Length: 356
Ligand code: PMP
Image (tube, rainbow, N blue to C red; front, top):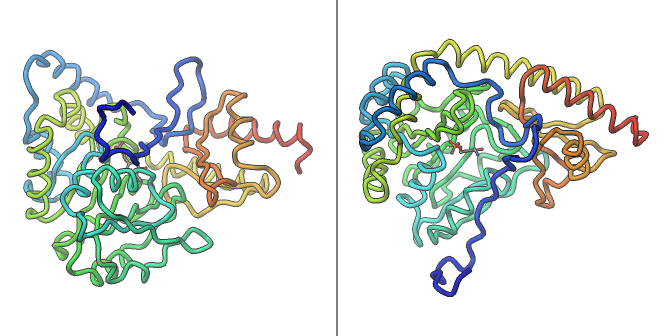
């Protein structure tokens, strides 16, 4: 930290993104991207839009909002697009947390939440999960702060049913509940329909996972118009052109190709089921992940060691060094060929080390 950096950031420990290797080709199962390329409709639309890059982008994202509302069946004043869903999550911390309204989230969840809390100087409370990594919803009743719940949760992949989210909303009528649905398209029910009934609900989602646009940075929030208005107040006070022209066009292209997205999700779910059964055969213990990743540990082989050994052999997976997660690894679901290579490589490692 330079002597010029404000002391208000003295305690800030930035989020550590997963490795994006530059030196060699890996089978990349470490950052929950899609193994499938973007829709050609997205690529073509982005290419055309690149010819107009001398002009600022439309701050209202008019075309994208229109295309989105047709697909999602929400009103045009009920959605806002951002530079990845990380941005709208940060906006929600800015808008709905302060020294009187703390942020509340599970102790094991998306690692950016505590960073956003620190960045915005808001107090936060981390609630322990149950032993099996599940969330005890009663812990969130009348919580007295703004609740952030990733559903499915990360890095466990465990999902709460919509009825549980409804009970959390019912028991926090005076506070905002943000449901981060980054991984909702891989087999869980979305809470979006609940925005009709709950003025305290904001749902965030992303084009980074099921829609293969991680590198374009496109996320969004859905809520009643009053909350979207709050988000716009923050957006227009920080960066009105937060979604660039090419990304906006790519987003419209993706939405015109919903069949491609659905087919890719179907394949990911199928590959997840394959990987889970193969990992169980090799003796791994796994959570019941409904996301595009699995969360697995082996009773006879440490998490960090497995991650390091796989990396040596050209496969990247994600290990978290927090004590409660140390035995585990988070593994993104890729193509069937990538998952077969993973299983084969783990078998080789275990054979060398005499693990049955
Ligand atoms: N929420 C969760 C739970 C995530 O894992 C991620 C991906 N790192 C995000 C939000 C943010 O994704 P993006 O900014 O790419 O939309």
